[in-house]
Image (tube, rainbow, N blue to C red; front, side, top):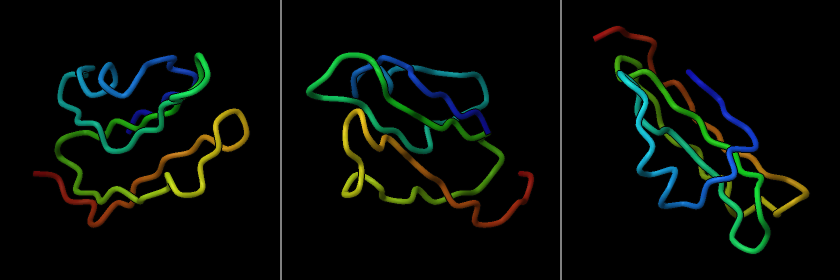
Length: 75
């Protein structure tokens, strides 16, 4: 897993970001203010579910995202 903070990307930019052998697991991007943001990339061989956190996120105050590993099984 790779957790990135202060990525400064907009939603579409994060969606278009690719990291070899990983997929985007969760993200939060600012809409109103510049900079900030967080995202999690998860290795393709790890099963996970995205935890919805947008309802509690607040730009500049609480910027979070989360994933839950469902089963640590290598494919």
